[in-house]
Length: 215
Image 1 (cartoon, helix red, strand yellow):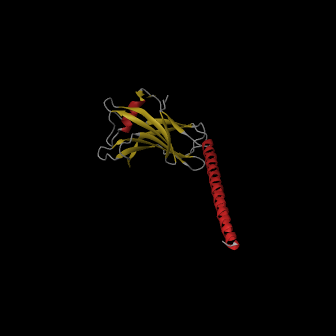
Image 2 (cartoon, helix red, strand yellow):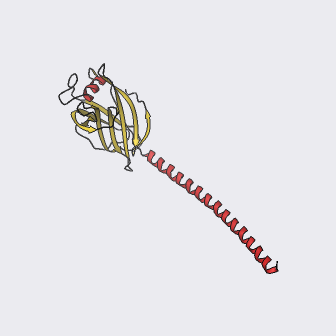
Image 3 (cartoon, one colour):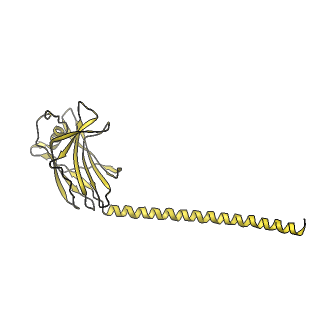
């Protein structure tokens, strides 16, 4: 092999080595950049979540155990299983629910509803009771609002297997959509309704599920 060819082989070998080192370093830098970007995104998400939680309202229903001399669960049963022609037992004037904002922010654009049992003629629809009047106002931090439901209702589509429920829909200052759902269970043999599960949603995502023992 002549000297010129040897020099060319050596140069080619050096070029391959340098290219390999460059590729390896580029890979290392790329991985480090991706990890840094992931860490930055995670930090930004945690910061946003903390900002949201610092101003997040949380509406919780306070359901009395008695309404006058009538046990509240009896009133709920009669109201939630009512039909167009009247009540199961008798006609109560309505049921009043007190909502408490236990969160850290103001609840905006509040809407409340009470959803009963399916219609016998349309099992896929249920009775949705609206307050009188239908309030759409703000509820301040640690504030309370009494909402009264009477016999005014309309039929709404409900998914199979749902439970009758109280629903509060509201927004925080960032316009996120929040929902509180208080479910009820029924003892049809004794014609009574009982307080069930309470859970919350933010922008449609369920945050948690817990039992609340109302006073």
